[in-house]
Structures are given as C-alpha cells and as structure tokens.
Image 1 (tube, rainbow, N blue to C red):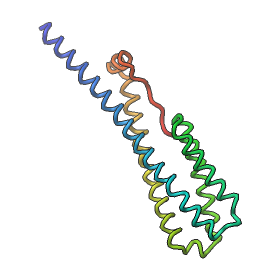
Image 2: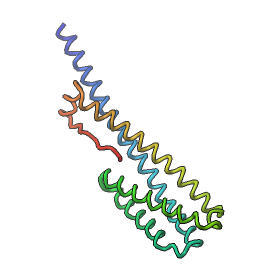
Image 3: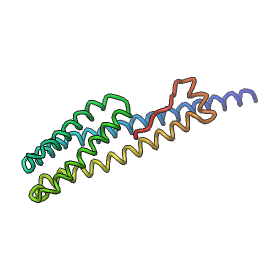
Image 4: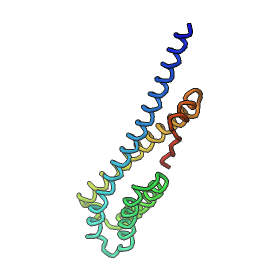
Length: 167
C-alpha cells in the first residue's frame, strides 16, 4: 500500500510539473507570436509614411510623430512587457492620427498602394489583438495554476513565478 501511495504521489508530481512547463512554454510561444506581428507592423510603417509623404508633405509633424513612435516601439521591444505595451499604444495613436490626416486627401485615399498598406496594417492590428488575447489567456491559466494547490508547492520549489499581462 505504501509503495502504491508513493508511486501515485510521484506520478502526481510529474504530471503537475509537466503541466507547469507546458503552460509556461505556451506563454513564451504566445509572446513570440506577438513580437512577430509587432515586427510586421513596424516593417509596414516606413512604406506607409513614404506613401503619405508624397501626398501630404506639409503634414510633417504627423509623419515625424509616426516615425518617432515606431522607433520608440522597436527600442522598447527589448524591455519589459509594460514598456513594450506602452510604446505600442503610442504607436497605435500615431497611426490613427496619420489615417485621420489621410482623410483630408482624396487622392491619397484613392491611391492603391496606400489602400493596400492600410489594409495590411488593419489586418496586422487584428492579428496583434488576437495574439495579445491568447497571450493574456495563457498568462491567466499559468498564474492560476502556480497559485493553486498542489501546483503552488511545486511551482515554488522549481522556480515558477507569476508572469505579467500584456496590457
């Protein structure tokens, strides 16, 4: 009977540990997917700025704000999630301003290149939103798991710590 109890406890420990590792790896993968989509967005912005520049050259302040926000977002990608999220939110605001400026230029709004870039950015924004949601759901699952019994015992012993959300 004692051997059966020990075997069951060992199996529970193994299953719990493997579940924690699996959940942690899901978070890391989800974070990588966010980074892929953010890089995609960062790569599209220079083309968009160049297209708008040809039609709205006197909107220099808006164009410079978008470029500066992009640079800041790229720089923040190596920082904490909170810094990265804040920089990406500033970039989103700058892009909204750019699209608002574009509304004043009918020729620009009709430009095929601009429309394609705008569609690509919209699609990428949707992918970013989905990736962030998946990441935050994974973090919720992981954090809940490491804080509940009996996984919290193993989490503490093996160095599993809570992860922060991508706000």
